[in-house]
Image (cartoon, rainbow, N blue to C red; front, side, top):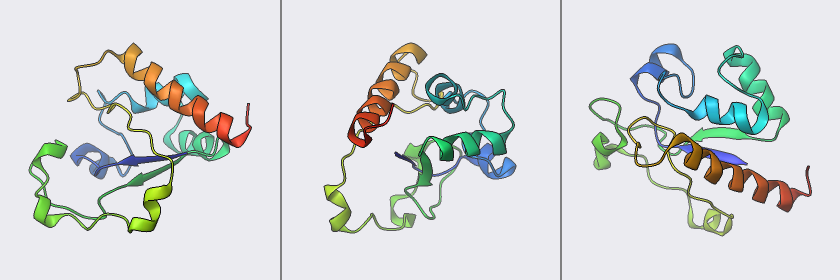
Length: 127
């Protein structure tokens, strides 16, 4: 499973860690799904993701923005999208774990992420 984020926010860049903003529920979600929760040291969380065949990547290799919101990214500064041949890869759009995406409760976000995890597991024949 490849989890694509847009671009790390200021706190993630400062700490040099994915999803470092304390109100982002990504690591809480990963804790519920695969045991890579925020109570673990960051490097151990990454190891657990690797063990569970989950990778993190930024869609934007580089971009300019003011603040942390994806909506503030200057479109003209974004590196182009992936080549068309990658469009055949199965994709699931999942709710953001960002605190800016408050339209869904944590429980509903977790449910959607769990569905995606289970789909990938079924595709791979994994438990």
